[in-house]
Length: 226
Ligand SMILES: Nc1ncnc2c1ncn2[C@@H]1O[C@H](COP(=O)(O)OP(=O)(O)OP(=O)(O)O)[C@@H](O)[C@H]1O
Image (cartoon, rainbow, N blue to C red; front, side, top):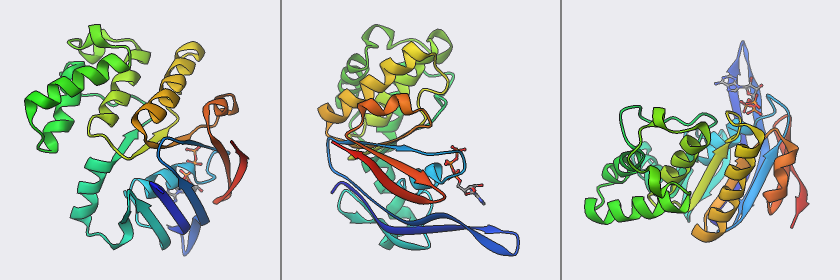
């Protein structure tokens, strides 16, 4: 399994006690498959993504990313794992205002110490695969909301992550643009072989998923498995 959560429990401090955000959550996502997570506000969806992204360490349970048991890694090792093996896409496209689309991707590759010339080709190829070949030299303010979100998708994929974590990627987009972004994610999951987790509150989006799970009060259950 490329992403595995095994009996994961996460609590947050809450007044005098603790609030249970994830309650014995298990999830496995193989390469090239997309799992959707639906559920009401406050049910634990973002906490699930944060744990899968190794941004938060759970109280108990195992989180395995691309064969690495993440809870056994040091913070520095987790940072390297995040950069190399995990792509994260947030609700709002968080691009650097002064950089062109191409530079947004190159910065990520530079951080990982990859060879600039090889990465330029890869960045161009990725921009083309998200339909932005002609927009490579535009800055965020010169792009539409949908195009900006496509840049963040390409950027998340630039280091060829094994795992792609996506949090409500269409919340800033109209319906048509939102659907196009979701179709693109489904396509790239297969093409790039990522284990993709898509958090969405909109059940209209779950058609693109291989598996649909529902989070309720920190518990995850599978609704539909392809
Ligand atoms: N840093 C934190 N400290 C304390 N409690 C938190 C923290 N982050 C989240 N929570 C609580 O944990 C529970 C799960 O929150 P989470 O953000 O994971 O839910 P969600 O399903 O993503 O919600 P939404 O759809 O509104 O984004 C909620 O009760 C929330 O209030």
